[in-house]
Image 1 (tube, one colour):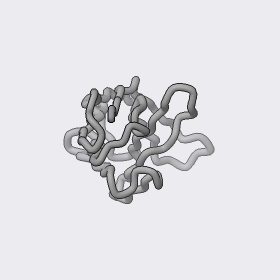
Image 2 (tube, rainbow, N blue to C red; image 1 turned 30 degrees about the horizontal axis):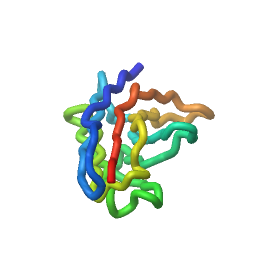
Image 3 (cartoon, rainbow, N blue to C red; image 1 turned 90 degrees about the vertical axis):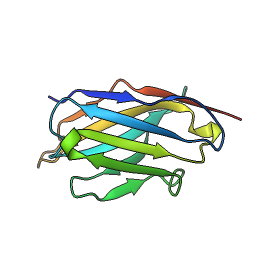
Image 4 (cartoon, rainbow, N blue to C red; image 1 turned 180 degrees about the vertical axis):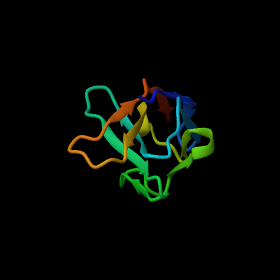
Length: 119
């Protein structure tokens, strides 16, 4: 089982930047890592993922502004967020999904970090 701890959230003015970090309790080599977010009253949505081979996927709403990266040696995944907008305000969750052949691969979630963008 992998435990995930997010950090780096906070309060930032629109057009500002934040960098989130997610530290895993063990190796992330065999996991697709991702960031999701959930605003009050809304469903959790995908922000970005990065595979173990480095392939990246972004939600249309963040493409060109956010960058996901991973450092397997540090068991850490990052989300660099630039040109932030008030609508980016959410709780951001780190996700690790194991790369195995299974109907429902094991996946793990962090407890989330709050990002608030004010105009």
